[in-house]
Amino acid sequence: MDAEIKSKLINRVKENPYLNHLGIEFTSIEEGKVEAKMPLAAEHKQYSGVIHGGVVAALADTIAGFAAYTVTPVNLDVLTAELKVSFLRGAWGNELIAKGILIKAGRRVHFSECEIYCDDVMVAKASGTFCIVNEYIKPD
Image (cartoon, rainbow, N blue to C red; front, top):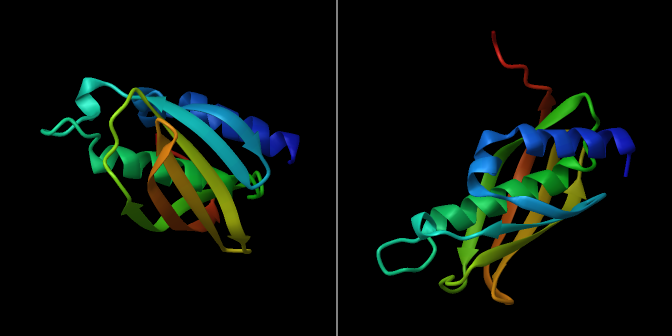
């Protein structure tokens, strides 16, 4: 993996308020493969005590997207065009583990998948299509 891309990816994580809010911590970053963990808190649960599907989907989108980002030129950015999440079972526990892998890298579109685990049990599987775009610069 290109050192400049890895450095940019790590900085993106550090500067991302949403990832920081969720407490997502990357545990492995390789070309085409990203793993992370996310601690679970009471506010992540829905009325029955199971982790809300939106929390699981947000983690899957993030990790699948970052797997795509690992092979994207440093001057370009990655945006989610489509995300499909299959919820396999309810998640109860203290932590989610996410494993993202790049399936196909293209010039303008990448395709990635992500598996989400809770207590060593797969609770969701997601796939996403990610557009490669010019780097987004925030307006002043």
